[in-house]
Image (cartoon, rainbow, N blue to C red; front, top):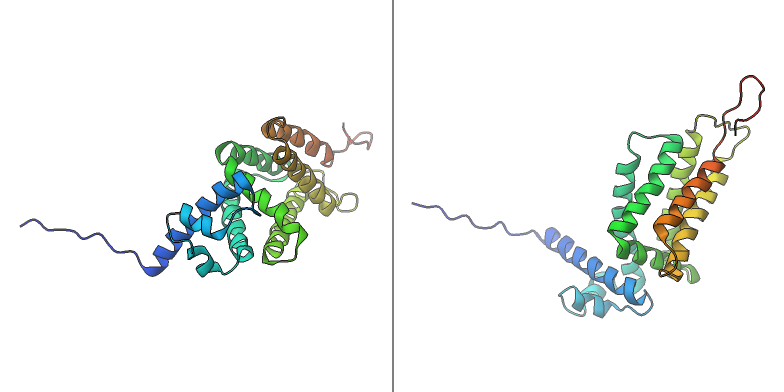
Length: 216
C-alpha cells in the first residue's frame, strides 16, 4: 500500500521568519525607488502579500522596522564580505573588501541602494535606527583598523589604524553617496577601483634596509 507523506508544517517561528523576509524584500524595492521617508508600513505589508497592518503590528513604528531592516541588509552584506576576506590579511583584506563591495553592487544594487538610503535617512533624528547605524559603522571601522595593523610594514609608533579606518570609510561611503545622488553619471564600480588605488597609497610602506628610506 502506497504511503502518503504529509508536508511538514512550519512552526510559528519559521512562519514569522518567512514573513519577515518577505516584508524586508518588499521594503527594499520601495525604499530603493521612492526613499525611506515616503515608504509606509502599510505599503510594505501589501506589497509583501500580507495585510496592510502586519508590519505595524509586528514592529510598532517605522523606525523600529527600519532598524531591523538595516540589520537584515547589513547581515547580507557581511556574509559576502566575510567570504571575500577569509584567508587574507593586511593589504589583501582591504582590496578584497572593496572588491566584495563591487560585486555586491553588481549583484544586489537595490539592496545596496536601500541600505545606504536608510543610513542617510537616520542621520537627522535620534532613533533606534541611528543607534543601529552607529553600531554598524563602529564595527566597520574596527575591521578596517585591524586590516591596517596586519600590513607588513605597520609600525604602531608611526601609524594610526583608527585614522586609516576613518579614511577607508570616508572613501567608500563617499563613493556610494555620489552614486546615490547621480547614478546616471557615476559608475560606482569604476569609482571603487579608484578607491582601491587611493587606499593602497595610504598603507605603510616598507623601508629600504640599506638607506632606511621608505620604498615608493
